Length: 125
Image (cartoon, rainbow, N blue to C red; front, side):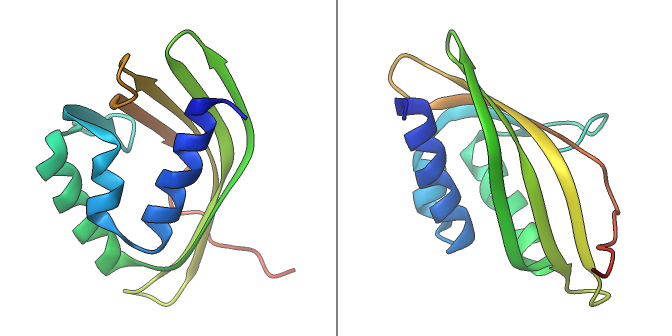
């Protein structure tokens, strides 16, 4: 497993715990996080902290699965699946996603872009 993929595993563990400070330790001070296409990005570690605090009030019982990763230069491409319970409605939300992490030479993440379909309710199996 590559260094970038190992970093992703650690980030996922921190996010699911949740351990926000451990999570932001992997980020550059000037990180840009694009959590949704057409929405302005979250900027800086404090912006990510605020985003995660808000996300924690909305999403419960999260599941984050990575199905595939690929690397090119300083980028890690991620394909996976996210699922959570919307605390406001009690509905289970599930969607596939794609993410791209850009790393600096020191291993810190400078840019993070996520792409996924919003508002997908989980179908009963």
